[in-house]
Length: 491
Image (cartoon, rainbow, N blue to C red):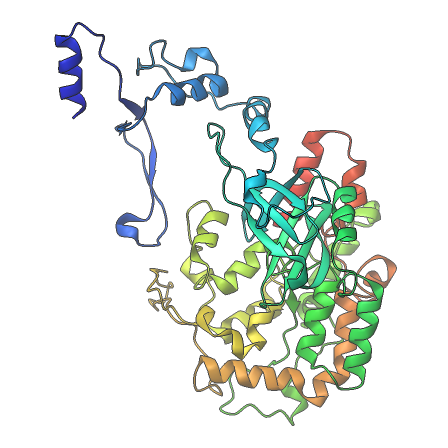
């Protein structure tokens, strides 16, 4: 034990070496008690935590503390001495600490075959997934593209790299990293895809130029034309056509702020049977969600006219049809940890959680702050229905009426979650929806999605919704860019 080692060192006349670090704090958070996914608990009480270094010295830890918070924050002798760590590290201190790690080059030992020929130098890179950003580096060889995760500021050994054979890439797509137009999504023959973000657009284009040229790029105009022709001729479904348009518009399942958006199609969640021959069954796809309820639209119009003194910044809808919070509203049962991450360790209030389809559709018709559309999962039975059932037994609370929030309540016409998805998909593919779908596409992806066309179609959102990569590049300070990215990704 540590005490025995210290006693032996004292008997031998040696100065005992510190093997533990103690923290005193006035507040702490408790997460995943018993390994159960649940809201984090904040404890407002004095507490002390002790971490023992069994196989190394805490000296390196205190060196890091000193480099982040200044020499006064770290104990002189490598042991705790009551120093206060109340001042957060500055951005400059963090950047200085991380720079050597981020600049660490690709390790040639990670090549699958030492006979491969590198086509690029070492490229800073980020592997992106929902609410996760793994920094590292990448290289492209004549056979594969590699991603090597950063291995930590103290590590001297490179992490194992992930490789993607160029022959396995079946499609690509240009993507965004926040507001930066510098990422690429690689679609693989296995059916999965990976999203990699580079430092600059130039580096991304360099990588794209080295990938197979005989595969489609979803963000090229030719891909959109081919998708349209296939849909017009009945060769691809409405569902697949919408997926293609979402991808062409830069939307991806790896980014909650640019998640694929699908329309509400069914407007009837109370009948015993879903009648696809009744026009009243369907939502009017010629209008944005915010304009479906005439009474609520008048409220939006009155507010819009009150902004006439600043028409460049006037808007109808202060919230958007798609945002990370809305995506996780639907997916909280299948992605609970992402929801806790987004909302500072909390689930939403039970009354505001996704628990009843009829209630949710009613909200997007009458709530002044709710104009959200749906996501692809509502029309894809093959992807499963785990987002509709509480298979993990999450403690989501109870509504003010005492109703427990558990599985999502289905409409009467659905016998089960699977039945709901199958019938919802049939509704999406029926002739009535096919006829109206181009009008909805114009609202989301076409000439009525911004500018004068959006004004004429009553489809005008808050100016934050229209921030582009060019707008971002024009910002002069890092503070402005950080604020713009935060607003854009959360809105």
